[in-house]
Length: 224
Ligand code: DC
Image (cartoon, rainbow, N blue to C red):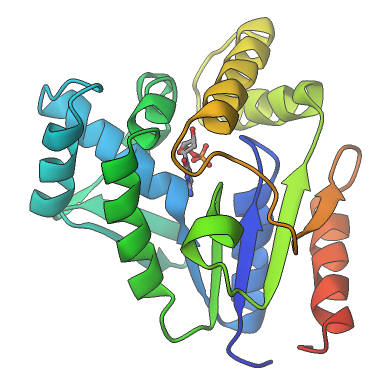
């Protein structure tokens, strides 16, 4: 397997991170969950009482508290400064505020620069909303995952139950629609499919079927 960059974009709960992690493990690539970076910043804003509308304040937080990842046997851990925030950044308080944080152009500029640095030598699987369009426009393989709102809410519902977070299904569906709307209509790098991305609808597909479909795209392009 060549040291290519694999960009996986798509809306909330489309299954990006699950398949991205599996593919990174299989190819021994670096996995980067860019959503976790925006979530970590949102967590910082909440804990440091920085308003979600305060773009300069948010940029200061990015510059002051480095966000990092650590791969372990039990999955990827996320740190801000030296504090582990893996679970904290998945709490509903962060989830419901993150789209607003991620909509600021200067915040995105800082995050994109950091993501490009991580990917500078290739050998990376990066998932997010703007990887194929803004972060790695030259990525050798670009995938755009979609799934129905109902199926995505169902997945998030099950994930939350496993994590002991109790949520109402209808509310989850509304929150997903709301986040889709903010992510797709913001001015700075909205969620759109890159022209050269391959679109895969994961509704009704198992994780292994999605992984296989992506492997096939990589093979078709001659990288596997
Ligand atoms: O994938 P996720 O749910 O963890 O993403 C959290 C939020 O971050 C989501 O509302 C969109 C935003 N995001 C983004 O704007 N750009 C990225 N590359 C990744 C995530």
